[in-house]
Length: 101
Image (tube, rainbow, N blue to C red; front, side, top):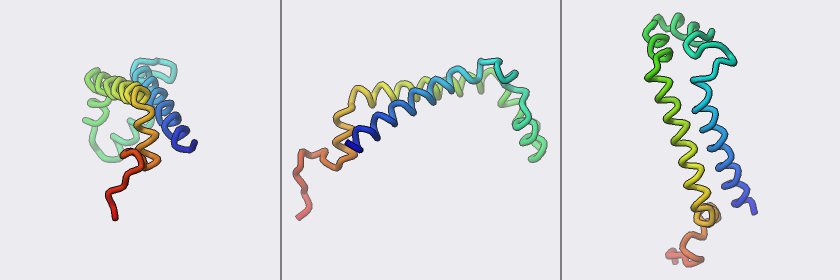
């Protein structure tokens, strides 16, 4: 039972994280993506204004969105292979046969 819940929570985590990574770079609810306090603090603290330029670029937004798509693909793959994942977590992937003496 614990193995099933573990796989279910992993699938939910991958779906939610994927949706967040797809939507967050393009959402303006919290302000523009490239203009936030944490990004300005990090670029000033390390003396690297290139960090701000890279993170604010559209290429970086696309890369973050790509990671979100990858997370959703992993969630669907885990959903399609649910029983194998549960068996693997339970340690019973070989059908109960152990090769150890």
